[in-house]
Picture 1 (cartoon, rainbow, N blue to C red):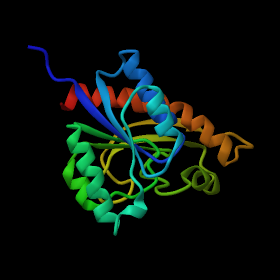
Picture 2 (picture 1 turned 60 degrees about the vertical axis):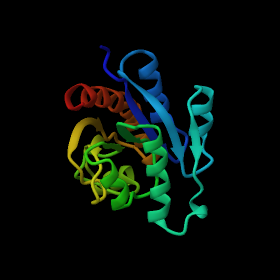
Picture 3 (picture 1 turned 120 degrees about the vertical axis):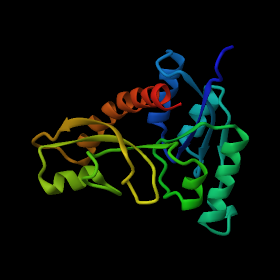
Picture 4 (picture 1 turned 180 degrees about the vertical axis):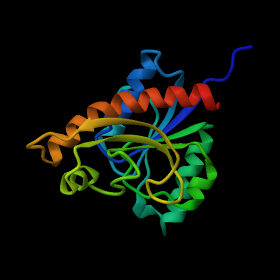
Length: 193
């Protein structure tokens, strides 16, 4: 009997480049899963791309909820309706509530553009430049209530070059994010589920 295909739910807020890389990896059989739903808190490019791929895309307006908890409860409901196995954060620019995290324990993945535990939070590339480090990179980690502090699943080092600004360093890190995230998702599926 064939095993059930792993279902991913993707949350994002922006252009969706990591989402596109993940979907392309699925289409190229590099990730043994399917994206069941794509959700955004903004009318984003990511939702447009999801529709182009023929995937279900859902815009959930934060203004339609009384607070963060009720907003996240709506997201959890949508994800559970789609029988999601793993939640993938792909440029999702909202901090998840404990209620959301508890709904998918050990099954929420995020990618962060630094070598965690260094440079958590916003603008980690600029934080790296300001600190004068010679190397930065990206980290895939599981999400826990503490921001950017969950168990690290994988990392990739990117050198900081002379003359780098935030945009240049960000662009080089993003190229590596696309490869690292897809590979880590596949490894997680094979080793954990």
